Length: 255
Length: 74
Image 1 (tube, helix red, strand yellow):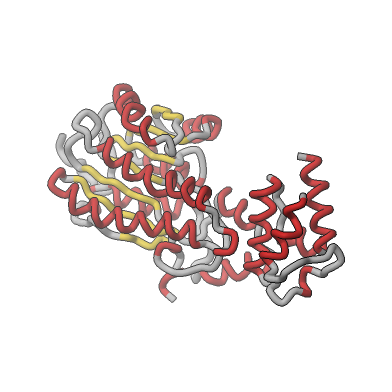
Image 2 (image 1 turned 180 degrees about the vertical axis):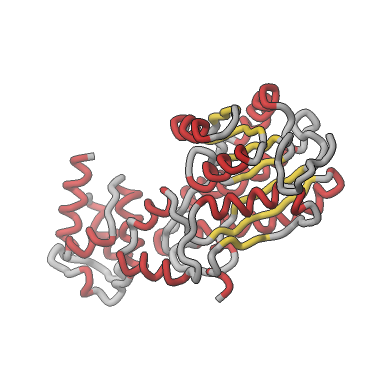
C-alpha cells in the first residue's frame, strides 16, 4: 500500500484502541475515525464502547475484553482482525488510577493496577507483532503514560510505578521493533477532565482542585488534546520518531 | 468493626484512639493521613468517603458512625 498524500492522514490504516469506552481512549477513537482510520475499539465496558461507536465517523469493530486477563489478548485480537483487517498499530489508553499514600499501599491493588496499566501493553505488543495481526508496514504503537511517570506527586506511588514502567517499555520496544518497521512512542498527559479524574478528585478538597488548575500554565486539558498528539504519533508525519516520551500537559512539566 | 480503632490508631501514629478524639487534633493529621484513612475505609468496609466527609465527621467516633451508616445503605 502506498503512503497517503497527506502525512497526517490515517486513511487506509487500521488501529486498535484500548480504553475506548471513555476519556482519552474515546476521544482518540473519535479523532482517528474522523481522520480515516479503521478501528477496533477495546474496553471492558460494553455500554461505553457502544457510545463511542455511535460517535465514530465510520463502522468500527468492538472488542469487549478484560485486558488484565492477558492470556485472552492474542486470540481476541486475531478474531477482531478477521473482521476489521490487519492492524498498523495500537493505542494503549486503558488504565486506572491508584491514589494511596505509602501508609496504605496494598500489594493486591498495586498488582491490579500493574496488570492493566502496564503489563497489558506488553501482551498487546506481543500479539500485535504476530504476522496475522500486523499489516507489515507503517507500524506505530502509542502508550498512554502520565506526567507522574516524569515528576513526583505524593500519594501516587502505585500509579507512578505503573506509568513510569511504560516509559521503559517504550524505549526498549522501540529498539526491538524498529527492524519490523514498528515505531513505539508514549504520551505523558497532564490532568485532563475525564471521569477518572472526577472520581479521583472527589478524594481531595476544593483547594486541591484549584491548585491543580494553577499547575497547568495552559489550564487543565481535554481528552481531545491528548488524542491529537496520539494521532500525530500514529501518522506518517512522525515517521522518524520512535522511543519518545511526549509530555502533553499544558506546560505542567515545563516548570 | 473491631479493626476500626486499631487501624485508625496506626494511621494516626498513636497507640490507641478514643471515640471522642478529634481527627484534626492528632499530630499526624495531614492531607496524606486523610487519604490513607479514605483508602483504609474503602478497602476494609467497601465504603467511599470523601475528604469533606472526614472534616464533617470531626471525631474518631463520628467517622465510625458515618462508616456504619454508609455500610448499611450499601
